[in-house]
Length: 141
Image 1 (cartoon, rainbow, N blue to C red):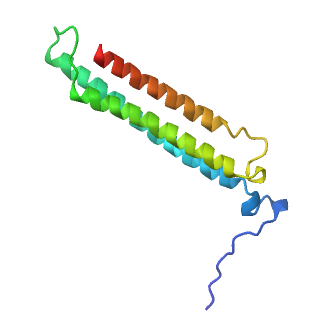
Image 2: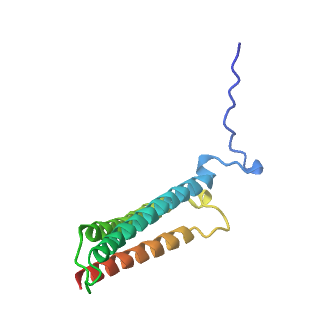
Image 3: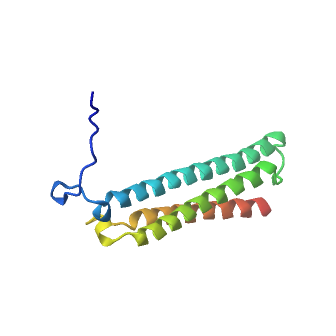
């Protein structure tokens, strides 16, 4: 009884399948990894904002007459999560940019803006850091 194991396709560019040296799927795999880290960072930022604002909600619920709520542990922890999420996104964008520079032009997809994912990741990281700065500012004033 023989087992028939399919061999991976060879590097025939006429059929759209390249060798590792000319395969743009390498870049797309790296971009999917960046987007997974971006999604993770956004989730951490969202969790941090929720934790920070839930502490504010609890402080107001305990004492509705208080004009300025005190700093709570959840505000500090939530702000830390927001800043951590921003750092995760920034770090993954830097790692993706470094990896992208190691690829040859043949490994990059043609007619594709390869910097778009970095622009999105940088923007989200900046906005997350701005949210963390706002939470710090509102906590300390």
